[in-house]
Image (spheres, one colour):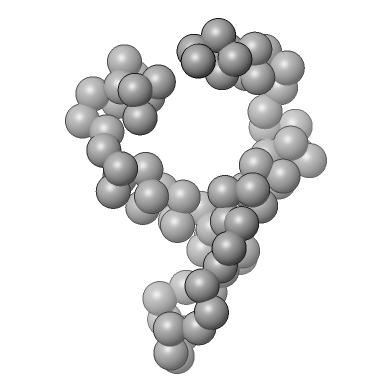
Length: 71
């Protein structure tokens, strides 16, 4: 969250998790809220999103360098 704060001052844990869940539903990595029952919890949701981002070249070497520098 600290890395996002300069661009998204009101960021919090809940807002980050909501966005991850939203992407997981939209990319059909997990069922949407309209499905029956609670279903099994999706483990590895973040990893699945990262894998898709890398596969479709949405994350590039520059991005990885910026993340490494932020640590």
